[in-house]
Image (cartoon, rainbow, N blue to C red; front, side):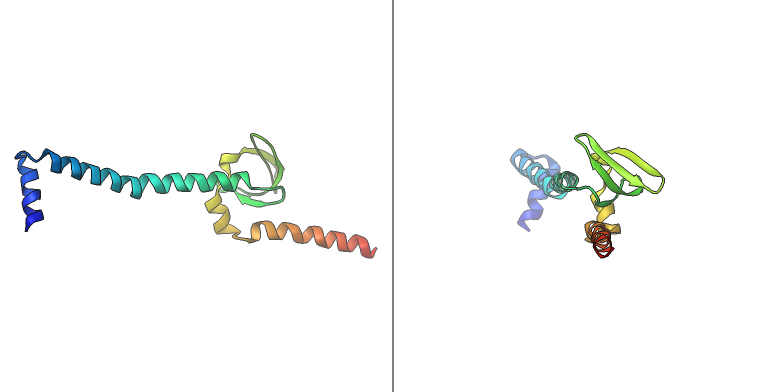
Length: 124
């Protein structure tokens, strides 16, 4: 009953500016934890993912293009696709799309063909 009277006083504007300030503060904290903080965390994960990519990793770009990293440069990646090699900005590589499409297989599949080639050359 007491909280109801506080809300009614706030609605009537009867000298309840401290209550309004508290409510505004609670709303700001709520927005921070529900909207701002998750966005910052996601952006940090995306940047870390893009910085740790290596040559040979299979990736999916934000445009939906699939390819394999052929070169890592300071300002971007050279991605090898079925139609050739293309240069993209690092921000174009999507962590979410890549993990959904390839999961942990993105780097594992690149190591297998190299090992097979080495075995084939040793037996010849």
